[in-house]
Length: 116
Image 1: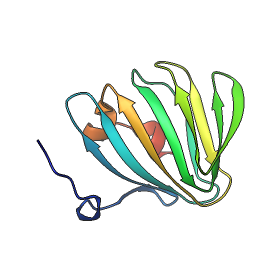
Image 2: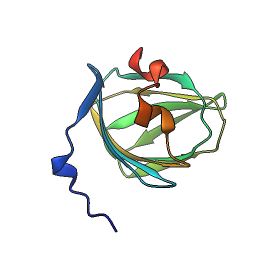
Image 3: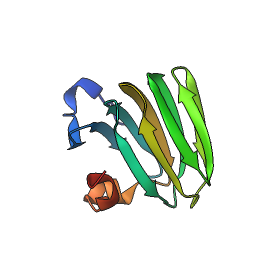
Image 4: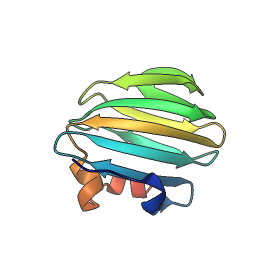
């Protein structure tokens, strides 16, 4: 058992417009995200199935070539290996859940994101 306190995890600003705090267990990565308006998450793929919940604001996703606007109180499911990208159309916060874990986030090899 582990007890996590989100307030004790420093927010990592990956770019000037994208911040994150995340926890990784054996099979799940759970992330709290902050995206400033205009933040671009470039197209990428990964093994992990992903659920993205928007708590505040709105993001425009392109998932498998299909565009979808996801607003506060909504979520989107992204299957494994499906190409996807996103743009914050306003200042936003959200929660992403990944399974299996995002090894690239843990080891810092998520260069596609750092260039965003």
